[in-house]
Amino acid sequence: MDALAPVPLNDGHTLPALGFGTWRVSGEDAAEQVRSALGAGYRLIDTAASYGNEAEVGRAVATSGVPREEVLVTSKLRGADQGYDAALRGFERSLGALGLDRLDLYLIHWPLPARDLYVDSWRALVRLREEGVVRSVGVSNFTAAHLDRLVAETGVTPAVNQIELHPGFVQEEMRAANAARGVVTQSWGPLGRGKGLLETAEVRAVAAAHGVSPARAVLRWHHQLGVVPLPKSADPRRRRENLDIGGFVLTGEEMAVLGTLPQRRLGGDPDTHEE
Ligand SMILES: NC(=O)c1ccc[n+]([C@@H]2O[C@H](COP(=O)([O-])OP(=O)(O)OC[C@H]3O[C@@H](n4cnc5c(N)ncnc54)[C@H](OP(=O)(O)O)[C@@H]3O)[C@@H](O)[C@H]2O)c1
Image 1 (cartoon, rainbow, N blue to C red):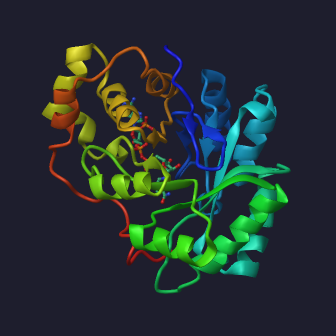
Image 2 (spheres, helix red, strand yellow):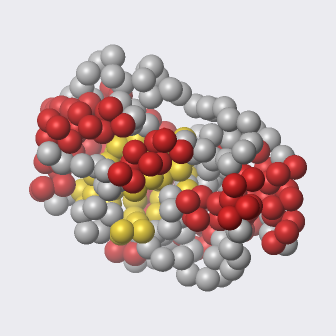
């Protein structure tokens, strides 16, 4: 496997080019998967307060044998903890559950615009970064308008915006909006969440042309778009396979073909989603 260059952030730090997702994995399964992912070479682990697995993720990081300073842990502020004081308390709970003394990346999970608390929440995240208990701060599922409001009202641009992104939902405008503001895009649901993307003729043809699996072809597509995918797999062989995206390059035509699949959002709409 070729090493993939780390991705620079607007705060001077970097992110690994690919991370491991932990949505809907709990208990001993979560601890086992994260420990095994770290053993396979993942160095960015994505969790969230609302996943209910922070304790297991933290235990896995602590017992993986990989030095803590080599691992980046992301967590996210859940909707019930939005607001300035509530966000500070929510962060303390997450950090306590994880058993860590600092977080590497902390995101507002959803903007929840109807509640109108995301700017206050953002001020709390900025304070946590200034205090040094969070290395980088960012958001998830934010639109360009939400990003602009944060910047206008606080002067601080998020380092990351984690959004739904896969060949079945290519998010060209949102990727461009993030890039124009110096925000790194992370892809959630990068493999299309097991809903048929990897079985499409287009993905299979591109994969076959390089002698790789459909998942590797799709993750390479993300990498060549300049975004950071966060694939999840319960299968150790697939976890290793998903890391192995460095030894081949998709042509411009192949990149374009993967961008022409029927487009459909699989998760919530940032303007209306409620947690
Ligand atoms: N910020 C947000 O609002 C948000 C929302 C959703 C998700 N996320 C994050 O993004 C992560 C990834 O998204 P996701 O879990 O929804 O979906 P995903 O990673 O796109 O898809 C996971 C599915 O793909 C399958 N898969 C994985 N590797 C494969 C391979 N090599 N070959 C064939 N199938 C493969 C998995 O099955 P097996 O397990 O059987 O391999 C699983 O069914 C989450 O875990 C979470 O950390 C964030």
